[in-house]
Length: 429
Ligand code: PLP
Image (spheres, rainbow, N blue to C red):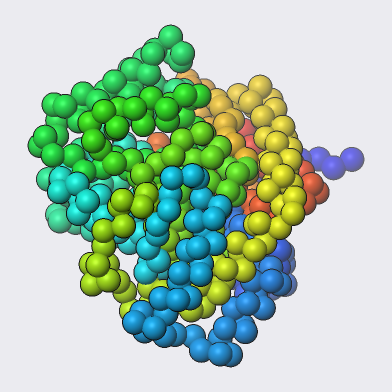
């Protein structure tokens, strides 16, 4: 019989230098330089939804590389437009225009804010505590994670207004859904009315707060939030950098939650296997940028565009998204029992292939230290790669495997995570 031993604390405190050195990726597996294999339960940085070596994307990128890797944006427009057309064909109704001169989510979000400011002539940006919108100076300023701002005096913006997130488990208003009547959205309206300069261009929101702790808003939240935005002429930007392209079980979280934002940003998953490429989609009337307003040397990079075109073909394949929903439901059913089985688990929440496991101390408080030990145990002992919500309270384990994960891989993820929690509970300090 296999006896599970408690881990000595030191086993979990190896310095980052002791991290495995990965040299290749295959499907959901990463191969280290010593030949050992790790199961990646978070698809890289949530940007490898098709696995590390999906043949259709690899072939498309190599073929493009052979033709040419780069064209100046003066000449690459037609390629970008093809990808935009493919995106707009599947986008929520109402989004009819796009901009494709970004490689990463941070600048795509800046692009969306620029569009909102230019279109409305207004200045302020409403965003949420625990949100993450990127790491340029401006997106650092509007993100709701103060630790990223420390050390950078310019990472503050007079135009940034932060409001409370719809974090029902730890409701900032100590209210309970649904009897709360969306007190948190009322607070957003109060902020627009009383905390802003009176000139609010947009509100930016992650449909699921990804890095902040996999916070899933309660049913009806986006309907009420959209109404408030519309009432005040505030454009609603959905930052779908993490949630877009199938992560929540539908191609866009806007579809999952049944709302249409005025603008939507996409990055991470758009390149399929981790190739950088980003896009901004918007309503036709918001097609206001001139080419010189927002453009980067590598913005419409042809390799990224080739990867995006191939990724969209795979996602649009017959039955692909239905399969993701099925596997997402399975993943949820495998993770949910962790609540109840372990006293360290206060909540398991998620949608599609985007799940979070909230870890607490004996007294029910968020326990980032225990969370870090579980992550380390999973990696070192079980060769399972997970990530923690450092940007939030630091106590949520994020589980976001590639959309192509098999049933066996999902079972392996849940089993190994459960073992890591058990071992840390048994040997915890
Ligand atoms: N928006 C969200 C929701 C993110 O999770 C991230 C990155 O983690 C970003 C924006 C920034 O994207 P990038 O790191 O590609 O600049």
